[in-house]
Length: 293
Image 1 (tube, rainbow, N blue to C red):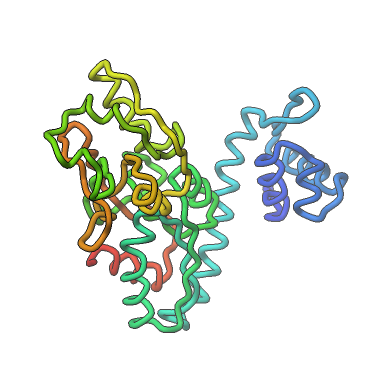
Image 2: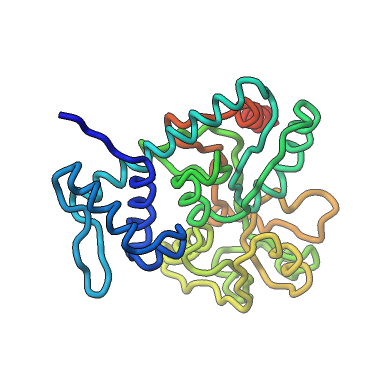
């Protein structure tokens, strides 16, 4: 029995599965809706099972569709990786490395890593996406990034992570803050207002839970900031307390750590990439540089 599948049909299926809507998939792919419907019909005939089912006005993946979606992604990765690897045979250390990176790592690791990479491989270009884990992980999963640098994601069979450095998140204030004139306890921090990330951000949740465990109220947030890079300036200018990486508290900064064991969060920064994915020589070189910073 012959089993022939058009790779384009799989790509169309993948986009339809992602959007769960034929019309929106038609707009993204610049293909007519009948053409996409025909592609799905060919795949269903080939596999002998329905791939989608109705869900209100839209559609959703049927059980067979969930299975095929996983394999369609894997096949696309293999095709793209084979093209990149063959292209890289002659190029060596050149091409583009696509990296997603957490704000702290972007500020304190990326500049040195980029300098060393460019010095060793001047033909390499970097495309960076700065963001938190929940933003950059989907980009890595979909193959839009080669790697991400940020907090440890834990055990996940889909990814490989390699340790880079330890990082500590601590309470910080302006060096002129009155807190530094006395011995501070956890409850004392509640006498002041804070500038923090929104609830749901890992560091914000960790801090809130620290107060919860002590049966204390959570900090009163006067300024909420989703962009980590602006927190040091906000702390210095407003006199508010915050919760940031110790990397921001180096010599010459107008900020100082409020030293409390209960409010010191330890985390690992790692570089993560998809398991079994192709990494170009330039990407491997960048990982090596990160590991040796």
